Image (cartoon, rainbow, N blue to C red):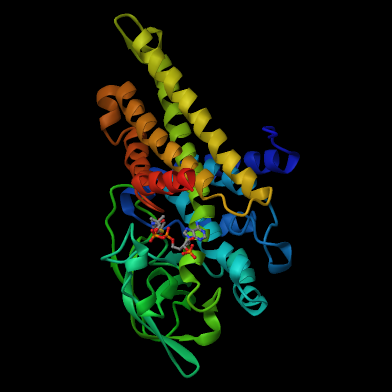
Length: 380
Ligand code: CAA
């Protein structure tokens, strides 16, 4: 495998890093406190082509590869964890399944508007009674003439409160388990759709994480995505892609925490010298830097295998998400420790990184689910 970035990838890294440093990082604490969705930043990201990075240019996308998308999500997350997942969800959980499974009419209808930010996307799989086990979902869709009628609810939906278009999964054949689920493209204007409770999250607080409610919601039958009863495969195939970006998000948050902790350890003096001169701090810094680098390589490797055309990369994507999530939690925890009492206050950003990092082990499949995916792949 070639580990060096090409010129496009280097350019994207620099562009996303500059944007995150100038635009996102200065606002991150404020939107974490207020929970306000960063509409202005998302608009600017659309202008930079960061909203539909892997979508073909004929549909208004940037036509970049999956390594580039991972790099962009990593850099954006380094500036602001909330904006990192907003970007990841719009790119890989919402736009990409339309690009991959959509009909030409669906692609024409949605992708150009998702590229400009006119339509923001979200992904509705999780429900109040089903998280790790989506095959047990309760939301139902019944064909009635020209429409499917959806009834049910989705919970913990990133971008849920502000999105215009949703990839929604519902049972279309109740007797068939995971083979009786279909995917739909639902618009917020479809009658019977509404947004429910806004979640007060521990971290990633500016992500408009909301419940979605479907009460006799009428969705045109041409908005079925990927074929009748093919929804479980659409969901799993999409998560294989998007888990790489959550790995990238975890790397970005961990890198931000490390950068701050490294600088602080060189400034903070105790016992007459900078704390970085103590070997116990040096050990922390060495282990933090090593695991971040290892996580980054796993993320790039998974993305590169997708780019190389590997058909099934569930194991690689689960491995990078699992390892990067563990790394993010451990590195941000150690960053708080290096800051000591100050790290436990809101005067410094490391407590926010710590809160943001925890979600990496929970959403888009818990770490326990990633271990199941990896073990099943190993056992064949
Ligand atoms: N690609 C294609 N097909 C797949 C697949 C994949 N990655 N994974 C499974 N399938 C297929 C299987 O091959 C099988 O089909 P066949 O019988 O034809 O072979 C079918 O799907 C059922 O597969 P399983 O029997 O393995 O399904 P399962 O019910 O045991 O579940 C699981 C497997 C891995 C545990 C899965 O349920 C899972 O990933 N759970 C976690 C869900 C998750 O990540 N939720 C997060 C929601 S998104 C989010 O967090 C919101 C947000 O806003 C950020």
